[in-house]
Length: 364
Length: 130
Image 1 (cartoon, each protein chain N blue to C red):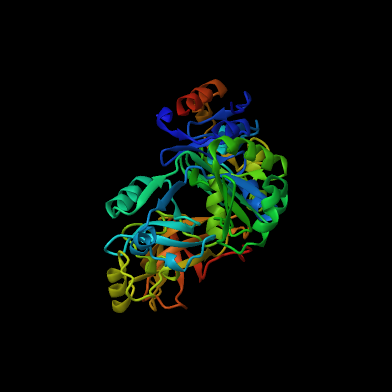
Image 2 (cartoon, one colour):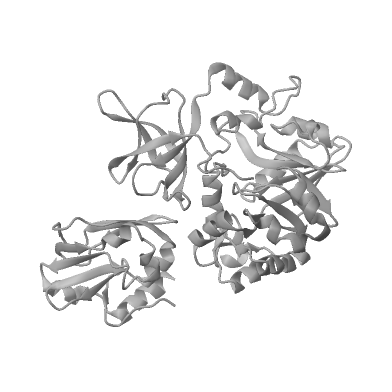
């Protein structure tokens, strides 16, 4: 079974660092290196480094690259200058989210970074809509690291070399290319930092150098609690093909202007907007001790004191920073803001407070 | 390889029992269990004076990964719970056989002790899990 799993160029380095390796959508990835909680705190307090080489990097080029992406993505890539990136989604015709992604505008063409879990479907979708003047090239030979935390940039200064001051001066979602290093001011933790795409052969040395600079190795477990505290969606949990971006707190990624940009899913989204979006994503904080988990039913208290199901937790965790249960839920849009909400947990209704993510103040 | 002290008794659902010799026992979860759970973030303990039958749910341990029920290996009355776990659930990870204990029971039937696994028997259970 495990022999069929793909390994990143850093798999041996993870094992040497004591990682617990787990299957993750066809990859063998580090879950943690001993303590997920300590890794979480290391990223919030100083800086951590994640191997995200399982992410799928796809380069889009050719004369029609821009027109092609304008047809496929929720975001407007024409407004991006070279060196700028934006977050958005691929939608199906019904307006459901095929994947979320970041699109980067390079000097020549674009780069998309999409999820590992959705790679096959994304590539098939991209290919199905490709025109003759568009070239699609997956860059499976590249590795990717995420360096995140308040001291991420400072501790990576030596490794970054001459690119360090320029990178530090970039705003969020800008990027630069330094030789064969593609370095973006992006991340999935709510912290300052960067993500770097680089040749696999350089990844092992980069990992070792950054660890020696005092950055902590961090696994998928910490990555999940960090992103959840930052209020960021996880594809497959918080949204999927059956959910529109308007129901997943991703309405801000949809560029409605210019009006004549006919991106796939636009008509369905416009219709949903006109009719009224049936559900919305909210943040929930558990009152008292305990942990929220994906899949729990969210209930609203009626005037008669009876609890009625109005939605479901799509992500849930114990927040190591807040030391309480937090989660994202999709609930009926008709639930009033001040309604008493609870989750059903082990036969009990436990009160939750509705809030607007992020759960922690973003520092990126 | 997880730590399985020879002086304790076990059940296959990964709880351990220390026989105190005065008609009471102490119960916790094993090193193997805490390792599989990952960082423990919350523990729900039984109420004092509750009477439990062997195999009853006696609490819940929530880790970063999942919620797991804790079962009592023996029948009896709960006479103490480790309330320090409320604020320091990580003791379950750092010291599962010591500061990470869950509750103490006054046994209803000392004969039930014979049905528990010894360290070798429990090691076989862990091997089968792996």
